[in-house]
Image (tube, rainbow, N blue to C red; front, side, top):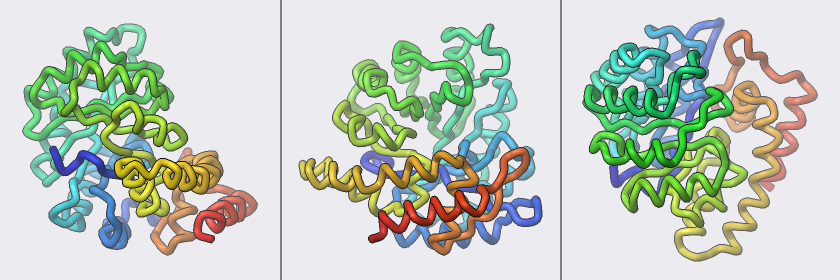
Length: 293
């Protein structure tokens, strides 16, 4: 998994045309991103509307992404389900289709019973059964459960749990993941506003939704930090974060608008999500023009 270190791997959108998955548009988008310095792609994340897709649709997304993703860029598939057995089933299928890593959000429907010990057993059972490396995804904003540094540290001892993605933006927690996970454990931030600060406590890279847009600038930000060009990194962060706030205010729909503006296929999200209204589209366009200026 060395190829994932020091990389930006966006959770990409899932193109929808007339209420159906469009493999053609997904492959076309990835082919455009292939011209950038992205380290790979995450399909079936939150930005990919994974909770709104059927099992069969998820399979089609992974298959199309595999066809379009070239050697040298890693394909990560979101495979988290509510039951351990269904998570194992989808993870094995993703591996069969060519996904190289599984990003796995934790079960959360029965959150009152899902202690850290329950989640530990869930991830160990998955890691034992998975033919590809597993990265737990901690996103309490979606799940209502925060996976603690102690839990992630315990999981890091399993040879098939190679990292963690964290969407909290909590830099203190990220530092705990690094301390307890060890120097080679992969740590990815899903939170753009705290990305630069998180680099100071030892994260490996970014899996932020906003990196669908202007991905090379986000790679530049990471590289500025790694080479010690901290003032350049701060200036670039100041340029990118206002756009980030505007786009992310509108969620998946906002991201898809941004892709349309850049010449990718964005389209509309699946119901119950809604596309932004025309005034919001213009707000996003204005924010993006300031980045491009």
